[in-house]
Image (cartoon, rainbow over the protein chains, first blue to last red):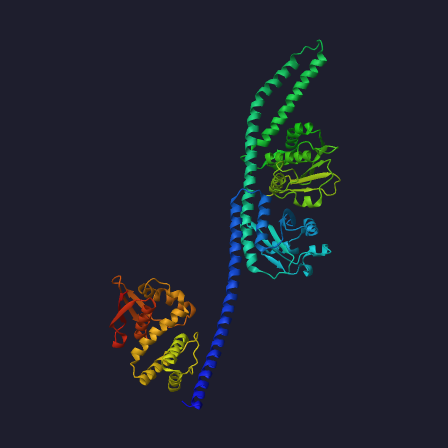
Length: 456
Length: 180
């Protein structure tokens, strides 16, 4: 082969090699790009999957919690902790509606770090109308609400109350309890975060489970309370019957003794006084027993309304509280009470209202230097007004806002269920009446107003 | 067909017949790829068949024999490139892994690879029947590959083809008998 031919042959071979290399590079580039795209896709899918797994784990934990025996506040805190851990957000908190339909802060928080104390304080002092602020909007619309930039949002009042807002974004989710919004959970983070619908969906699902737990808890406690009341009533009824028979004998014997006593005899005055004491005490016992019977009478007929003398119900109920008041050194005064005032009511439940309010007043003043309770009852047009005032110095507004909410209590753990005032509120409402705390009174004063006749 | 097969064919032709012959095959067949083959690329089967046809004319050797030799050579090259697939105790075990293991792995790397379908019959310890089905009808290549594998495993195998796609049948039946 001559040199020229060989050169041409080698040149063609080289050209083919170059073309092959170019082809290989194009292929490599395509493969690299496709590999990168696949890897990016895989990463996104992995992240989505991780998020979904975390969401499922969160929901599983909430479901387990809902099946457990947690107390209400512990359950709320546990929910917030799990939700914050799922969102990777540092703040979780619960707002609850009060009986006026406004949102007030609960004690349930989850806070990571100590940087949010001023925010916490401002939050706890907040009372929000429906539609007001982040939780107010979730409450009014019954849908989750997200605010990406809290400091510039026109409807986030807490931002205006703080000189330096440490948080940037937040969202709130309503908690459905028995068909209503029973609470609103809210979450905050320091990082500006775009709305994440899937995150809110998971939290909403968890909130629905939490709502079932809250509904269950509320029903169970109310059931427990009514069972306690029923068994107490049964016991009181039995005791009243047992005591009444010998009491009748005592009264009869003392009356006979009084009649049989000669007009002139030694120590007649002293004997008269003793016999009268026996008769008075027997009458007092009889009144207490009537009160007990009233209290217990119709635990099985809770819905029954009859015409009853409210003054008698009041006196008999106060007689029930008398011994406890005396032993606590609390002076009780019935300052105003008309003679005979028939109203259409459920006597047992009205007795429950009076006893509960007086007992609460007693607990409130037990540790004070000045201890007294004054009770007023008056007829006012078509209503009767009962006022129970104690020597306490009133109730601060934040507490007043939550007073009639189920489970709210300022008493020590184990001393109260936080249900007493909520049940009283229910009874008064059933009677078509109102109960409130008189803000203008320098002392603590509860006012109950009930119509004399039930509207048909 | 994957570029690696063309690269092996190129290497074989250059080794046995020189660069001039390879250049002549390209020049005479004028393939669409212009003979610039990359192992990961995919090229028309016809390019290979046309080159085998020209080579057969140039050498006077039947195309079937050339393909069989190409198969033996290819196996040798594949064993160097992919030793992991050759970790078997015997030729029979290796051949039995072709469809269920090697082809599966090839498909993962090259989803567009046009692989033949191979099924097996196992009449006894020193026998194996491989049934080959492919529109390419490259049973001669399969036989060459089998012989190449026998050399790799230092075994001997006799191949008797009792059915062939080239005879209008639906499959090629390669009956193998192994001797150590």
